[in-house]
Structures are given as structure tokens and as C-alpha cells.
Amino acid sequence: MTRHADDVPVARSDSGLAHESMTQVEVLAQSVAGIAPSAVMATGPALIVLYAGSGAWLSYLAAMVVVVLIGLCVAQFARRFASSGSLYSYVARGLGPGGALAAGWGLVIGYSCIAMVGIAGTGIYLGNFLETIGLPGTSTAAVLVIFVVAALAAGAFAVAGIKLSTRLGLVLEIVSVSAVLLVLVVVLARNGFSVDTSQFRLDGVTFDGVTFGIVLAVLGFVGFESAASLGAEARNPHRAIPRAVLGSAVLAGLLYIFASYSTVLGFGGADGLAASGAPISDLATANGLGGVTWLIDLGVTASFFAVVIASINAAARVLYTMGEERVLPPALGRAHPRHKTPHVAIWLITPVVAAVPVIMFATGTSAFNIYAYTGTLGTFGYMLAYLLMAVALPAFLRRRDELKGASVVLAVIVVLALLYVFYKNVIPVPPSPYNLLPWIFLGALLLGLAWYLSVRVRTPEVTEEVGSIEEEPVPPHGLHSGGHGTAPGGADGGRDRSSEAGPPVGQA
Image (cartoon, rainbow, N blue to C red; front, side, top):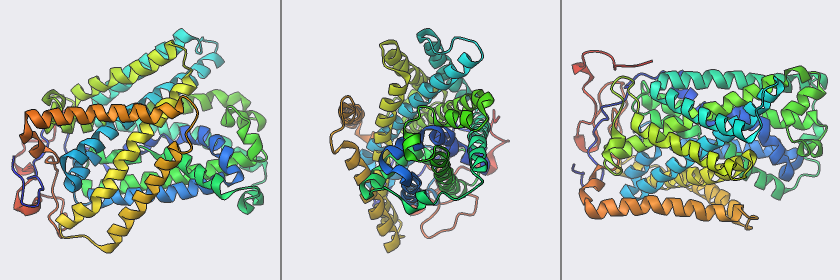
């Protein structure tokens, strides 16, 4: 493998995934399921109001702006560069192999931990549902069984096909969002659709409370970029991925703003919401929908299960790309011959996603604390990847001779916003065990970097592979026409689809 004088690797295409099999809706479904909006709508506002009070909606609005800015950075790459490696491959084109490995490993940690959040949430809400129909669902044995079954089922769906798993995730999210929206619309109707002016006057709201609420609200969006991992499988990825990333961020943000406003209204103020342990269920009971609380539990269960599938899908594709580029063992870069999915990477991740929650719960950690601890660790991984991507953006564009002042300003704003989020997560030092979580994340990150350094010492030529997987390259200053492209420097990196005998095998 060779590189050009500007240190950009010659593009080469993945050969194992189901190329051009994903429609715009299915690509969007990956990002939406990665966010799990209904789960955040059901639980997030109650946490935000502890700090932002009746200004929770404002914290979500500001967080949506921050996330959209991050999404614009993703779009700058995605319009020019598509790969199953997602942000790992993006950062490689700006910061080189070391930065790419840090971003990629951060993403793997993030996706894996958020899948664990999904497992924990599935255990909580499915257990509650089983109890309402007279089955034991909250005992230790029952929850452990739910954890294992949920992980194995998610892994199986991920292997069976990306179209199948994303379609399932979309259906589950539609069901779960609809269940939550049903309750919130009834709340508005019972209040005569009147405007709660106290929330807009921001009575009792402080600037510090809203800004810390922004930090927490941003966490409800992580995973929105996961559509970028479908660069090899999306039809017209240079258009579909930016639309999915930005569209999912705006959609989730609007849902969160609506949910926070409606739940505060339904509880008669921020204090009532803060005191609720199950806000949506409590609102349903208080507004004559007590008979359908089971539907809410089932809907939120569906959302958590969808995020498990989406996170495994995204993490596996990052590992798959690293395997193809030999940064990780090449076996990870193998795709299923029929389903065209990274089955080796999927079955590597799935047991880990199951084992951590099982061990934690079996040793006395509550499902809610599993949710909180793994979610915090996962967020650190996402934030690192986002930060490195923003730092890499100007260098990436400069190498293509496409750097403009607006892109630099965008990158600087995103970097400063993410550094602030990092800062507010560690200063002041949170109580135990949250004070240990940054160090645990750092230890996991260093393990990945140590592996990379060992590979670099043993086989230095591997660094030439990093960032080389690219689908339909867009030439500098060129417009993507939907056909073949030219890699920077003139190397043909596109797949010669005219030589294919037929569509990819195993598309669901």
C-alpha cells in the first residue's frame, strides 16, 4: 500500500459488505435507532430538570444546536468520503493513523457501552411489563435471562442482514415513540392545549443550571452519527449519510424539546417531574391512561432493544474496517458470505455487551446503575471521536484544497463545545463511583493505543493501510455523480460495478 505525497492513502474499496443495498430511509433508521429517542423522552427530562428546572426545554434546544454543528462536521466528510469505518476513517484522512486509531477505539467503546445501556434498559422495562401481566420479570434470575436473550437476539438480527436489522429498529422506534407521544398529547389535551408561560419566562431558572442541563442533554443524542458506518452499504452515501445524520439530530431534538415541555406541564412544574421515578407511566396514570402503562413499558423496551442492534451494527463495522486494514486481526475483516454482514466482529462484540451487564447485575449493581455507569463511559468514547473528527476537518479539507473559513469556524466551535462538555463531566469531581469512570475510560483507551503501537512496531507497513477503505471517492472540487470516482491524486478507488454479475448476495 502506498500513499501520496500529502500522506493520503490510495483508496481501495471494501469487498465483503452488501454494497448499495440501503435506501435513504434505512440509513436514517440506523441513526434514529442509535439514539433511541423514545427512551430519552421517557427518562431524560426528569434528569435535566434537576439542574435546569423549567428551562429543561431550553437545555435541549441548545444541545440540539451543538449536535447539529457536530453533524455538519460529519457531513463535511461524508459528502466527500464514504467508508464503513465511520469517524475512524474520517480522522485518518486528517490526523493520520494515530488519531484514527484513538477515534475508532473511542467509537468502539462508545457503541459497546451504549449497547450495554440498551441491555440494561431492556431488562428494566421488559421486566416491568412482565410483572404487569403476571409473570416474574424483576427477580435477579429473570433480569439476567432478559439480558442474555436481548444480547443474543440483537447479535442474531445484526448478522442476518443490515436491511433487516435497520428496518426492525425503525419499526420498534416508531412503536415506542408513538406510545410516549400518545401520553404527552393526552397531557396537552387535558390541559386544554394551553401555553405554559412559566416555562418560557424561565421562572427560577439559572444560567448555570441551563448550561449543565445542556451537558446532560447532549448525551441523549450520542449515536446520531452511526449512519456514517454504512458508507459501504448506502445507496449514494455522499447524500444519504449527511441527510441521515443531520435529520436524526433535528428529529430527536424536536422530540426532546416537546417531551420536556409536556412533562413539566403535566406535573405542574419542574419539582413534580423531578420527584417522579417513572414520569411517562405516572403521567399516563394521572391522565386516565393507567390501563395502557404496559404499552409504555413495551414501547420503551422496544426502543432500548433497537439501540442494542444499532450499536452492535455500528461497532462491528468499525472493527470490520480496522480488520480489513490489518490494524486489528484480519479475521475481523471477514464478512458473512450470504448475509454480507461483518459476522466475526458482531459475534466478538455481542458476548461483551452481554457479559458486562450480567456480571454487574449478578454482583449487586442495579440495572439503573448499570445504565448510568456504562452510559457515562460510552459518552466519553463518543465525545473523543467527535472531538478528533472536528480537529481533523480543516486538515482533511486543506489536503483537498477545499478549506474555507466557514469550515475552520465550524471546527473551532465544535471543539470548544466538546471540550466544555468534557470539562463539566469531570469538574467538579463527581461522587464515587462516577469519579472513577474517566480513569476507567482512559485505561480502556490506552489498551487500544498500546495494541496499535505494538502493531506499528511489528508491522510498520500496516500504518499505510489506515484510512484506505473508501467507497466511490469524490475527487477534490468534484461533484459526485453516483458512478465511479477518482481518489485524491488520481488513483481509482471505486468499485467497478459494471463487472458485477448481479446484485450483492444475501440482501434482506
